[in-house]
Image: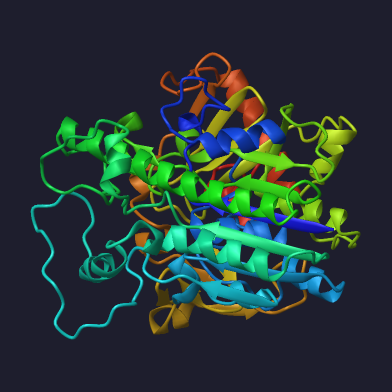
Length: 492
């Protein structure tokens, strides 16, 4: 038995033709793979963004109610760890630089072996004492380190980090032709920003923009000229199409090596990306609109059955761990909250009644198959708010001395006896940005208003969604203070 999980970062579902027939993305290889696969139509994020999403995948639990950005914890039971205990070899190849920064500890080391392709984003790769100048007139984020990296890999498409990741995966398959009992994770950072692709891909989208550089989202409400935002969107699409091309080369290698037909292959993403919708660019700080929360999932069965079919059950990436363990005949740990996707495909299990998702310390969101409800914090100070961890790190930094006087340690998590730190949120950096953007609860009828442009005013329905939110939070073993933070304490 062989399983391959392909994770492409920041794939916005609305650009894919298998989901939206008029989707703008030129992605022939995703479309071909979709015809061989079961398409899941109600697949959503759990925890976001990057590292929280990956912890969900590797532990089968929704983590955002108890922890922000961080590494694999000492008490986590992980997918590759369980596979290893059962004699299943695992390997990851990736160009995701956050795995190798403070706050991304221990993910790759869960696997038997790993391979890292350098250069994405601000990866501290090319070393120069004298840093290059950045274009101060460029829109969005800027990085001297990224300029250095681009000077190297930008010379040839096959040297871009995500193409190198797929090339690495091809070589691994060739080196292990005919092998069985393995789990391969192929993780391409593209189409994550900065949106970089050779000119030929921009030409596919008639991108003739001549203004200031804009390839890295500003993570702010739109303030750039309309033509610059349009260029950013086309740059995203160009990067998506480049990633699709190299995905196709990997799938072709699998077929050439006789390892496509009888392998379980999963293709998904961690979240989408806002490119001007609702007046926003980026992610993390705004409400979890469908552009970022409603994500693609394709699953190709090893016997080729059910290709081209779709399923409507509510699913999330926490479901990948139990699905893969089930396929490899491994016992699923009791603490795992995900569901086995095979039961949805082969047994017509109706599945969950609701799902929750979000970012740590921000709004908590619930979806029941028709209505989406964004539950805002109940107070302007967003308190009480704590995160739990055995390793006090977050995005690019330690939760250090400034937290010491208010930190506690104890057995606070219901699913482990491991003592953890209980650390208060002290700044907006702890919750990835300005909380003001999510301080208003919003209710949408997704069946009638998929774009979520017309909030509803229905107190009865809002109370019902609060009940569903509370039920799902209890299932996720939410800390009790979350109910108070969201003004749900009477229901908790």
